[in-house]
Image 1 (cartoon, rainbow, N blue to C red):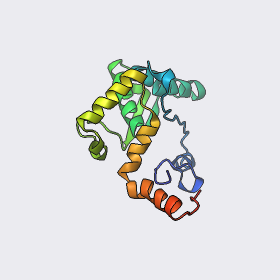
Image 2: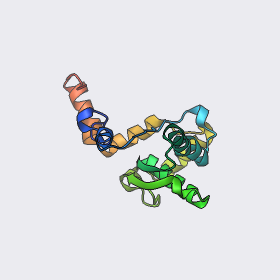
Image 3: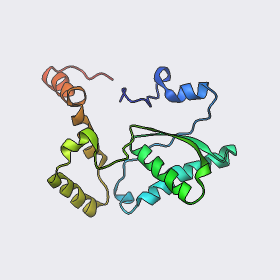
Image 4: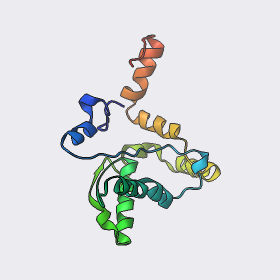
Length: 168
């Protein structure tokens, strides 16, 4: 999505800007889970994601600590990881942490809350219990509806009703 700050196009790239400022940058990306991840816990995600990445960075560069920059659910995961590392006296592995659009207080989920009525939550919980994961397409559809004029209806109107060719 071209509106996200982590756009990797050279003219818009935060990564390029950071590298140009002299920072060494490593990226890890969220992977939408499938059936093979159905048994993973949040602790597994911390170990297999940020903690393993920090170990790989230390092995590759010799740096014993990192500056974390995280986004969305990655920020929630990064914050949990920092708390865990601090509780196990390894908090110095993280020099600084920046959290962009990261949810911390799940009692107020923000705009997505319009989709979270009790029957919807019960259905999601039943699906998670049955499958072990939530299909990323469900999340994408929900987030697209939050900006329905930009991300949903414009495609329907322009591509289907008007017959316009979608922009690349």
